[in-house]
Image (cartoon, helix red, strand yellow):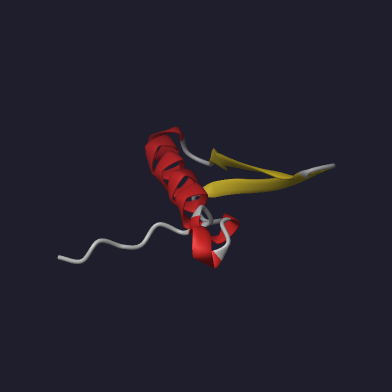
Length: 58
């Protein structure tokens, strides 16, 4: 990720703010997608295991 984005982390009283900025204007959309994936990646970990929505079976 560091090859296309500058990454900074700001510590806050209730967590942290992670900022991704594209090094090249042509890569803004790619950096936005990466940030969205990072946000989605941790979503399931914030719930207790018994509160997670089960994955539907095909």
